[in-house]
Image (cartoon, rainbow, N blue to C red; front, side):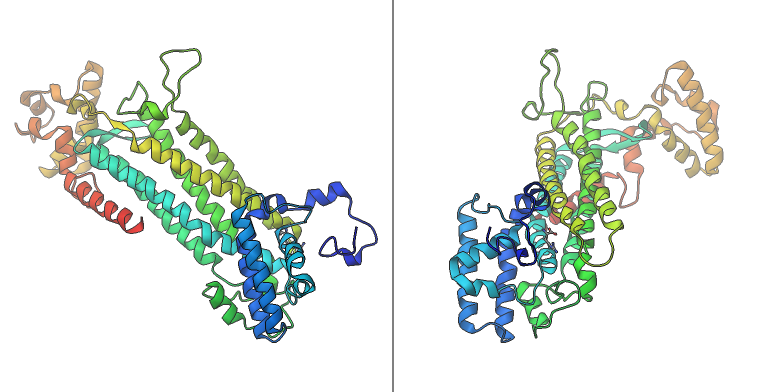
Length: 462
Ligand code: ARG
C-alpha cells in the first residue's frame, strides 16, 4: 500500500487489519451523503480561497473536480464504492484523481468531525421535507375519509368499551390532528439541525481566518454553532429526528390498531379494500390486514432506534468519538421505515370503505347514559344525583337485556319525576352528537368546521 491509502496512513507502520478496517468503515452506508459532502466541500473551498489559504486558480480546479464528482454520483448510483473508509475519504480520493495534488489542499483547517456533522445536517434538511410531504398525504387521506363519512355515526370508546356516540368523521380527524403535530415536530428538527458546524476543527476551532458567518449564509444555515468542542459530539438533532419519527410511528401504529379492530367482523364499521388486504394460504375466507400489522410491527424498530441512539450518546466523553458513526444507520433506517409506513397507511386509509351502521341504535344503546344524566341536569338535578338515577336505570336495563329506546314515557317517569315525554325523542345517538357544544366536540357543525380547517391545512402544506 502507499503511504496515503488512508487519510491518516502517514502515522502508521503497519497496514490496517482488513477485518477491523471493514468493521469500522462507514462507506457502505454513508455513501448516501455524497451530495451533502460535496456541497459542504464546495463551500469550504470557497471559504479557504476567500481567506487567502487557497489561490483562486486552486479553488477553481477543486470546484470543477467536486462538481464533476457530484455529477458522476447523480448519473450512476453505483459510483460511490471502493476501499475507502468513508464518504469523506472517497470524495477526497476522487478529487485527487481528477485534479491532482491541488486536491490535497481541500482539507486544510478542517476535520472530518465537523464535516460529518455538517453532512448529516444538510442531509436532514434535504430529506425531511419528503417525510413531511408523506405526513401531509396521510392527513389528506384522513380528511377525505372524514368527508366521505358525512353524518355516519359510530361508537367512541374509552377502555375499549363503548363510551358515547361520535361522528365517524370525528374519528378520522382525531388521527389527522396527531399527524399535524408530527408535521410541526419535524419542523423543529429542521430548526435543531440549522447551525453551521464548520470552523470548529477537530474540537477546538480552526487556525485559518475563515469567515464562518459568510459560510453559514452560503450553506443556508441561520446560525453558527456556538462551541467547537460541543459541535464535535453534538447529535441532539439526530435524537430529535429519531424522536419525531418514533412519534409518527406511534401515531401510525395506533391508527393501524384502530383500523384492524374496526374492520374486523366483530366491529365492521369500515371495510378494507381488497387491494390492500392479503389472504390466507389455508383458510379461504380470510381477508387479513397485513399492511396495518406491519406498520404496527415496524414501530418497534423505530422506537428502538430512538432509544438505542440515546443510549449510544449517554456515556460519551467530550469531543468526537467513533460511537457517533452509529447515528447514520439509525437516521437512514428510520427515514426509510417512516416514509414507507406513511405510504402504506395512506393507501389503506384512502381506500377504506365506510359502512353506515344499520341504524342509529348501533351507535346508541346504553352509550346514551351520559345524555340521560345531562337531560336531568338541564332540569335542575345536581349531576352527581343524576348519575346515580341513571346508574339505576342502566342496572335494570342490563339485567333485562334492553336499552333506553325500549322505555315508554311512563317507564321514564317511574325513575324520576323530571323525565317528561320529550325524553324519548331526545335520547338518541343523533341527539347526543347534536347536543355537544364545544368547537373540539363531535357536534356536526363543529366537525364540519374542523374538516374545512384540516383540508385548508393540507392544501397549504401540499
Ligand atoms: N465516518 C465517521 C462518522 O461517521 C466520520 C468522522 C470520522 N472522524 C474521525 N475522527 N474518525 O462519524
